[in-house]
Image 1: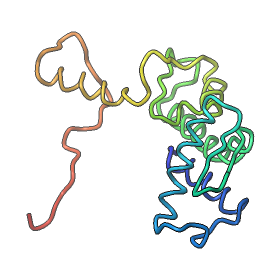
Image 2: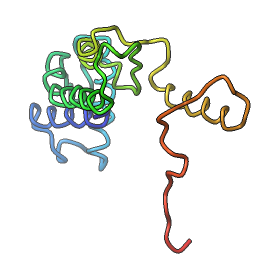
Image 3: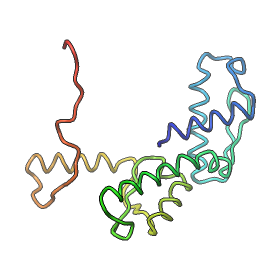
Image 4: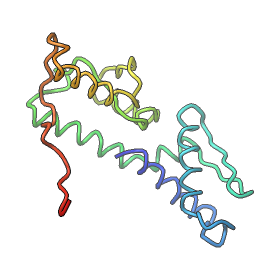
Length: 168
């Protein structure tokens, strides 16, 4: 689940609601125009109850309630993934001290509320969700460089993970 999935749901909603198709646009970038507008709407809906966007002189809108309904199944999949991860680790939500949310979609109020409800605790917001992965990678690099000896990271994806190319 991620922002692209949410964006596509908004695009699909607008296509249906406003009968949008390629002939509705003068530019050749129909899909890109709609996707960029959906991103803007999604970001607005993180703080507003309604998003009104102008696309090529056409006003399109979406309410947070509609957006929440559109993303419901994806949010449920996220919670199911959390349940499975806890089960695989033989842990319960009571064993979790801190929930750190990663990625821009964690700013979506529905996502935040459902994660909070599932874990029974308010997610930690002391780190920018767009920077948390990079911060972890920087800490790991610092450890590998020998600069930090007071930290030990466990369950990290092996450093041998990479991309294989043929004929290069």
